[in-house]
Length: 157
Image (cartoon, rainbow, N blue to C red; front, side, top):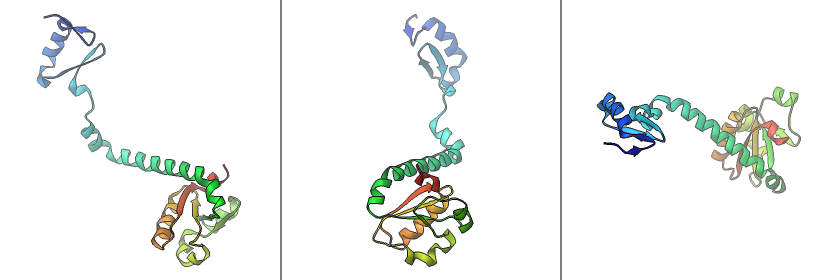
């Protein structure tokens, strides 16, 4: 039996089908004739690589969220936002963004009175991890508008 299927004739595909008949499925992609097992199964992908995929998802979320906060900076400044750098005092002294106040993460719980609840709060640190923890702490203590910009250098952009 002859006929064009995916750019190949049955005469060419038949020997391939006989050779890989144990799967009982032959997939035609363009001019390629492949066994279905050549394609990576999505469930297999998640089972094998879920830690890497989760890590990529986490960093992707941090990147996307940071870009969103950077885009909101003019509005947040206009609304009287408080900018808090949660790095250590030594890190803050070596370099910082103008207009930020330094409250190290380990002191944040005892210094909540220095941060007004009436205005938005934008947090930063070296990479975004400590400011992420600070965001959780502020949310837990009743701060309605808290944003994590990630690295402090993003205030300079």
